[in-house]
Length: 122
Image (cartoon, rainbow, N blue to C red; front, side):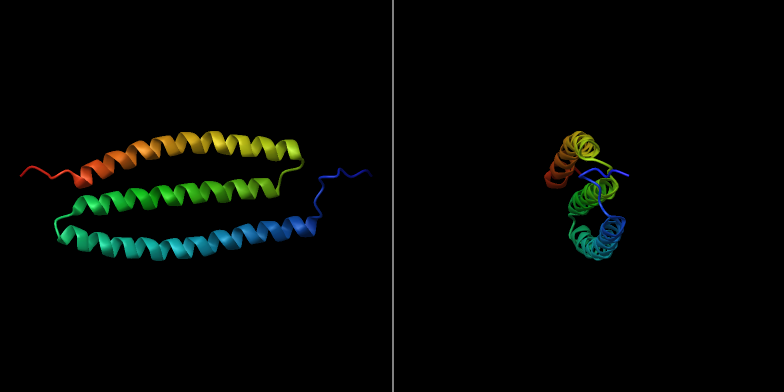
């Protein structure tokens, strides 16, 4: 049975998969705390008549979570890649998808920011 130079021992692959999953869970815990903190700050801003700040912060947190989850998904796929070509294809697909996502997010964040700093007419 011949092995390719890229072959990763199963124990090492399992360790990498567990490490990615543990890191994802740690991030989820951290992110939950960040969301609660942002919610409290957003509530204070809303009470001060700055409700747009809360909306802007919610957009930023949502996009941060989406982008980090996409990176974790990539890490999971890379750990399971069978050869360098597959790893490069995964990375290429990830970059294309993330560039499109970041462009959309930038437009939406810009709109939310403009809305949060534009005085509303009463």
